[in-house]
Length: 387
Length: 223
Image (cartoon, rainbow over all chains, first blue to last red; front, side, top):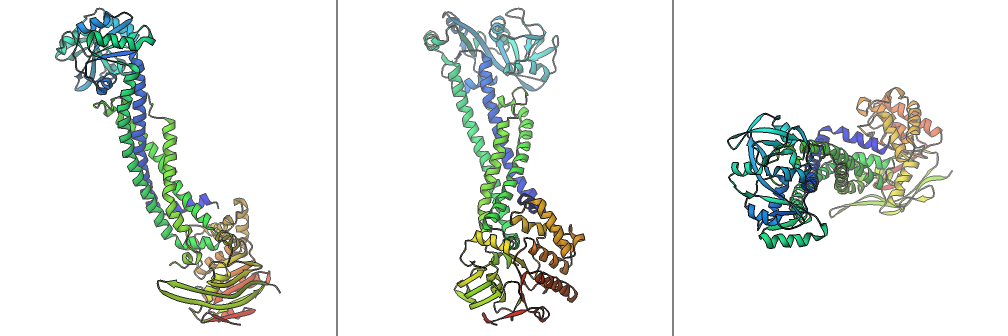
């Protein structure tokens, strides 16, 4: 016999209570893991999307806030009020590669999809895309669509097939190689076609800019502002402001999860208090047999800790399943859209798994302290005389 | 003969709310090593309280209690627990086996608490079950054993750490006469092997087997 075996025998004697206590902590930890996994994924995706953008600077409509910057990364619809003249003014500044985008959304088979109006040649050079099937736009005004790899899979489309965008039939020209970023889930149109279909003639949503001299970013920002009066942010500024928004969302989610875990902790307190009460006589027997107060305290703490470990493991499994199951369905909200990623299984972060099980165990041990103390301070006679 | 248990003016009173009840008043007595002693007296006169004090399950309100040269009424709780585990084996009227464990596990647990490694526990527990004639019941839970069998498991458990003293509170109080005779024969055999056996009892049958009788009445001892 060992203390661990003794505790397992005690736990397994009350199967109903074991199940309900574990359910409590499982739900608490599962929600914690779900939110942490999604939050962690969100941050990773933002970093990746920002890098995938390939721009040092972004020109956005005047008065834009962090939300518009987030929309660039998520592929959400954006206001379209940067004019062709303004783009031309920016292009007149030396040392800049300027690529305008029209960011819109449409639906194919009633499923939303991001539409990006691009200048074919400039964007291909800027993004360094490769075409995996079919062909890329052959001219700046070609009527047709090029699809990201995930979008092609999602809608089961192949080059030569037709899609309808805002009532107009378009041929699928080609499919891009997978990039691992948001572009994979996007439908690309030549800019003039997109402007016509979305009634935004000569206007774009934002422009991505790559500068020749990285150390002169501030100077370029000032020149663009003077030339156009538009908003300009560097990639670092954008990352900071978007992560700021996401951070707030994450903290809120984690607070909700913390409340769930706290409720589970009180479930453990309740279970262990009931155990201490029911096992009063057994505690007395153990004391008569030579168990010290330290040993009784230790046995109760061990039991709570085991609840924490088992609850933590089942919570992590449940949480990861929930996060994986939920992720594909939460694409409508700008804050959560990045969670979807491109289905590369990045939810399984070992750090989150280890931290969650550790967290669950620590919380369970803390929850067990008071009941263990109550059990340990029983005198042998008081405990053994209990009927 | 050395006295293995000794009390000097030991008294015990309990206060519940505003009412103080005196269970033992000024008890001084000795129990020689290797003796077979019965503590007898009417119910509610302090026999069990005296057993709790000399076994280190409780502390006197006044006076001193010794096991050998150690004044157990003063040592810290954790040291007292270690001493109980190694030097005293308890047997209770209602057996007090742990219901979730098998007979052999109930014996092993006493050794676990004394820090004996698991593989040695199993060997010793099997020996002890053989001593009490229950080898075939090793895997039975208490609920699958008769009263007499449960009490024999409790005696085996009390012997697990080879204590000097066996302290028993009405060990045959819940047994029929056949089981009572078997348990008493076992206790006499243990006494012959050198154990100090102290039994709290109402039973004349048990008291008849004792070498020494300590009578407790109204919280006082009359030898």
